[in-house]
Length: 77
Image (cartoon, rainbow, N blue to C red):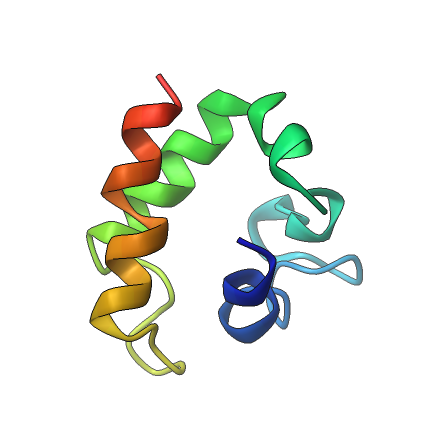
């Protein structure tokens, strides 16, 4: 997950003035993500649904969306 966050998310959702008050840098590994399942289900739904990143920002490749999107959502009830 970290490569995806580094590439597409942390410029806007990093530790300095995070948009929507969402600092994704506080999730360095899967254990941290699993502690905040509700937030991550929403995040992954938005990535898989092409709501994030915004259209005017670099976009994950389809295989990245698939890898980090819906398969992960099933793991995070």
